[in-house]
Each structure stands twice: as structure tokens, then as C-alpha cells.
Length: 263
Image 1 (tube, one colour):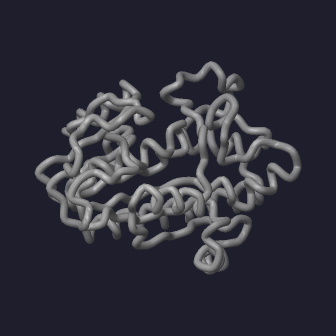
Image 2 (cartoon, one colour):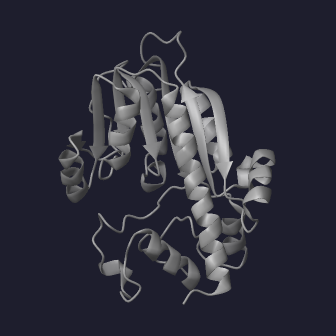
């Protein structure tokens, strides 16, 4: 039986997740794409939905987990196994739309990944990034009391936490049994952890430094406030929201790859 606190946390978390999904789909709907790339496509479910919206000539997914790759292929996604810490396996100025949802925080080479996205995008191409925010207030609170931030970086796995209620919520979010008490024994593919969790303002700075124009940003989840107040505070202070989405575009003037990107 869930406690009132747990029910409330589930409520505000679920609201945050649904609002993120709504913004993702709304922003992709406005794009035209011959080539669409989904970084960290997981099981291909979101990729297939976006493929229906964009109707590209090519919809490509990159994923590292073999089991997820098989599931994506069952959805008729053209997916390849790739470590996103490495240069992307495609030519420059090739892709129209790139999505990276809950991806960057699992990588160690943030700068290289952002630079590679810039390189492969056509001039005028768009990237949509959804990422947790290290500077969210609940992470700051965790550090203030001397424990690891819930959003990471994680020492063992994404469900391992110094706060039992956070661990329980992470297990629920990943459809894992509450009875398993040794998260270090979970497979790496299922229990991938957050490694470099960028703050909103820092990732925005990196995107601009690479050469992107920032078109829009959205914040989600201003804990512990309920949705109506949270939405207002996220607009005022996106830098402390739980999650953020950034929409950035490669300027039309770039006919070849930017000097800051990898060759």
C-alpha cells in the first residue's frame, strides 16, 4: 500500500513525464525530414511513432543494448549497435532531425556527442534533447545533506539510491521487482546508470559553443510543488527544473561541418 507521500510523488512525477512527451511530439510534428535519427532508440517505440509523424525516407536508430535492438527491429526500425561515446557512423550534413531523449546523461563524452550531432545535421537541421538536470532542487538538497543526487551520477545503477523512496520509484519506473535487493547484479543493459548529468545552463552553453542556435527550451518538474505551480516556476526558473528539453538548430550558413566539430 502506497503512503500519501509516495502517491503524491508518483502524481507529480507522472505529470512531468506526460508533459515532456507532449512537447517532444508537438515539436517533431512541425519538422520536415528526409532522414531522421533517434539516438539511444531503446526498443524503437518512440522511433516508430516519430517515423509516422515525420514520414522520412530514412528513419535510423542507434542503440547499444542488444536486446533493445532486437525489439526495435521487430518494429521495422533500421537500427545499428553503436556506442554513442564514439563518433557517429554517418557522413556530415546528412540528417534532418536528431532526437536524443534521456541519452546524454548516460555518456562520458558530452562534448564529442554534441559536436557529432552538429556535424551530421544538414544546415537548417534540428536536434531535440531531453535530459535530467543536475541543478534540480531535489538534487541540490541531496548534496546538501551529504548523499548522491537522485538524478545521478549513480555509483552502481540507476535504481540504486541513498533514499529508499527514490529507489522504489526508480524500480517502478523500470518495471523491476521491489524484492531484488542487489542492483549491482542487474545486467548493464537494464541497469545503465547516469554518468555525466548536465545542468540546463551548461548544456545550453555547450550547444552554442559547438555552433547551434537555440530555438526554444522547456522545463519540467519543479519539486516538491504540484503541477500548476511547478509549471509556472519552470517558466521562471528552468535552471532548477527536474528535466529540460532543448530545441536547437544548425544554422543555414554552415555548408560543411563546423570547425569545433570532429572531422
